[in-house]
Image (cartoon, rainbow, N blue to C red; front, side, top):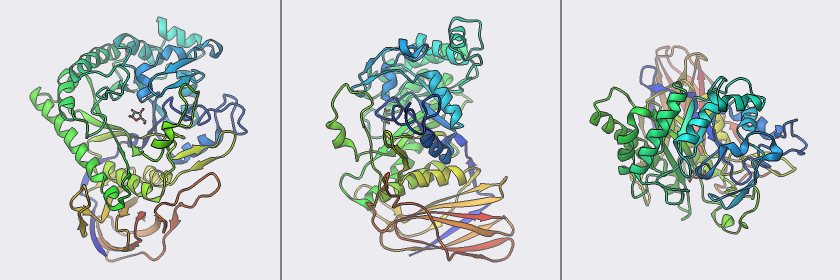
Length: 502
Ligand code: AHR
């Protein structure tokens, strides 16, 4: 199969915000306990954080991590996690039916974030709590000193404020599964009041309002427009969440799901713009896609977990090759929408639907989805280029006109590099790619990184890394300085990063 692509320096969609390579750690399952934190583990540092897991997080170069939930945050008392550890309460977490020891809280998590060179995107509880606890946590984290909560932080050994910039106003408040779920009007009101006092406490913060939990919620659309009527002037982003599954074992359909993600983004952006128009406002509200991934492999196992245990193995999806392709298509979709999506979080980071797994007392290892994320995070920063593509399309059970080639290019002017990200959705045929590349002068093919496996169900484990990137040989680039022709072969069912330098 053939595909033709045009990459032109001037066809810009927008600059990437580095925060689109964010991720998420929730107090859920083994994400924190025996994931990032395991005192007594052979690789643990003096604070109890696992160096092996931290090293893999650093490999992904994650600029921001959302914390502490998720569904968990809607029942969380953040004050439980500060002060002397021996005084911290053991709580029932109603979101996941587990026990939370609070051994890790705001200050421990901040130390871990520093260790892995990441920023924190904090979420506040707008389920069981409201404006007061939300403004107090902003004061605890961001106020310099000389007030009750900031002095309490200082008494906990943290003299400088964290100055966390990005805050989520609750989590998935449209979902009946949420602790103290609310209607759109109820949420809009509480979020508006919380936003107001949070920003009064620290005017420099940015706020994310909860959009729909997914695009298939019955209230999708009305939820966004109703709650935005209340909060538009006070917030900076609306959140989007999506998880994909292949329960019916229909891979062509599964690979088409990123089209739904694209439609979701465009619809929510449109609703933000509608509210902007209704308010005759100059302000644009952008998007925070703060939960995205594949999630379904662990659903049956989770139903067997005994309730009220501490840090059980919940949501431990083991990802295969086709999941990595879907993750790749989702990353490309985020890039293609770089003009509106300013924050995105791969949900989650360690053990819980995660690219990184740890064995309690044992190894940390990389799942299949680790690699497309690492590639995009490393090579996908700069100006995203709109790349017209000519390729055959297919229809699947739920999607029409799915292009066999999903692709986008990113130009990093500082590094003098262009990266073409491409997923070949064709399960049987290679794609012979011809890309006309204009506006960069002389170019050389630096590397073609490839992730594929003949068995789409192949998985990695602590023992064996079956799915890992290799360097694909055989591509070429030639032509005059003004316009170059790149030729490359993209194997069936593959994730590719073609890196060009000038
Ligand atoms: O990431 C797992 C869960 O998925 C989160 O807690 C929740 O926000 C979403 O439903």
